[in-house]
Image 1 (cartoon, helix red, strand yellow):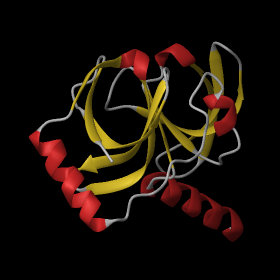
Image 2 (cartoon, rainbow, N blue to C red):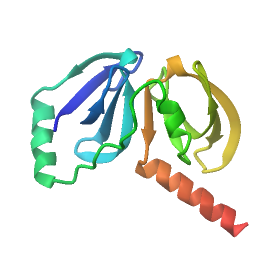
Image 3 (cartoon, rainbow, N blue to C red):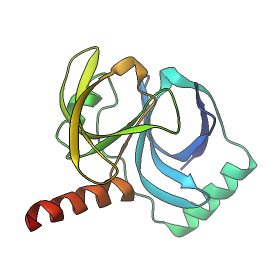
Length: 162
């Protein structure tokens, strides 16, 4: 098990996580979004990593996580140019692009070699507009985290209530 922190092109904040799997295109991590709080899977696109580091703080967190023995396994997704197509089966995903304080949440409708079409979900858990995202702009993709699961669950409950 290895904890790495990453500086992402154009972002002010670093991201950090436990590395589960990696390829030439992507690194799959369990997202350590704050201190010792693990939540969800994040795919980090290598093209936009300025550098990664593994220093004293990351080593300490490795020891803590190893002691907890609650690390989830890899998703098993093939981390290549086909990753977006594999994620089409998911009900909700989150994309982070050029700015680290903006994300786009929704369901992937379709994709090709240059872009994907996303049916977006608002922060109030309402399905909204469709938008196109250039694949080259994607920095990270998050799945199966508490925020996404809560939005989707609330959306489904609201639909049943109607």
